[in-house]
Image (cartoon, rainbow, N blue to C red; front, side, top):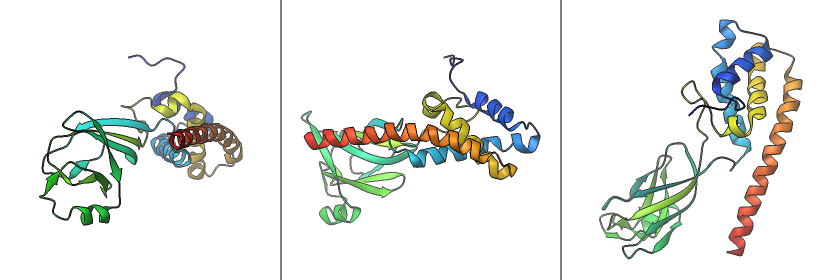
Length: 212
């Protein structure tokens, strides 16, 4: 699929950065991917939900309470499974210690009722699955990082100004440049709009949860 000319890409962002900085020497060009990565990280720390909510569906393994999390997982919102009779059953979040106390014998199997973070890459459920249950997880992910192979992501498509000025800001310490104040104002304005939308999204979700 061809990317529309109006959409920022990794390559166009790189070109814009060299033009704004008026620098195309090797030392600066080689650092641009680092500036972009730092800008993405900075923006992701300041917004919580925009472009980051995903749903994954998979199947549990009989006799194995450990479930691998999706790539770039950030935070779990909810988990449910489909029972053998075809009903949707929520799996409730509990502390890891609670799961160990509730189901101390991992070889004892039944329909999972609870889940917890086992580590950063995996969940654990209890009891250990006695059937290959289909399950669904709603979660927040880290936005796909930009690269020469990944030309666009949610930020380039929905917040190109934040990406541009955020990347320029990350370049300032490297260049020991005095233009930071100019780029900071533009970046702050772009982030204020994103944060307002993000806060509205969080408020809307909270209202739905309270009314449900």
